[in-house]
Length: 259
Image 1 (cartoon, rainbow, N blue to C red):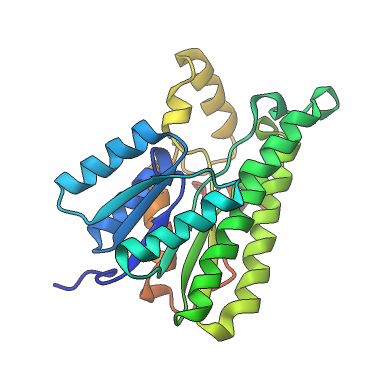
Image 2 (image 1 turned 180 degrees about the vertical axis):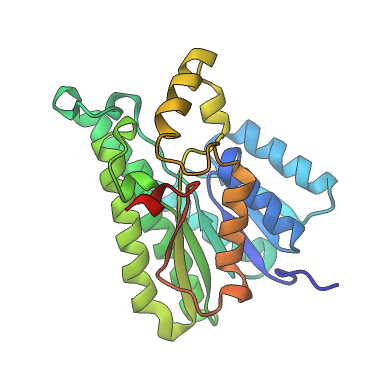
């Protein structure tokens, strides 16, 4: 039976763990050749080995998605390694520790600048170089990872994170309109509380407090698994979503159903 991404090449950033790792695994299961990228080389190589043992065609390249020279090299080596680039999942995004929480008048400029670079500039640079290849090679599909923090008030993430994720949504819409005639579809997901490795690093008490706070917004009263976010990304990048572009898909346990 033919798989959804047979013969296609996919690139996934932040692929060492969490939503990125789950997305790389899902794309590989669906037949894609996958280039994994992350700044965590040890974890990225471990993901590569895991997928190779499962029979996937994958490689890993350490790259900082906020550094243009790294992204240019990442896209170029993806094409050189696998012969093309048809699908991209731009997952990189994080709030600097000095930029979290609602009291931004107490925060420093470094936290803001780092958060914007990690969460907004990384997506701009990734799309810039992915699209440059796709324009010259018949098109493709891109899914960015935004957040509910870009759509509504989520105090824990902080103002920089919220602003950057809102920008990801607007960049997705802008680029979707601009490149539709060149056969490039661009969408994004907006995750709710997702039980990633980052979440697991908190103490049990901190996790319980965070879960209680976030689940006030969820209609479905549990956190989202990384695999569930990955399946949304895979759908939006598949031919099944051929008439969907510029869309923001909340994967949020029904949070956005409230407004």
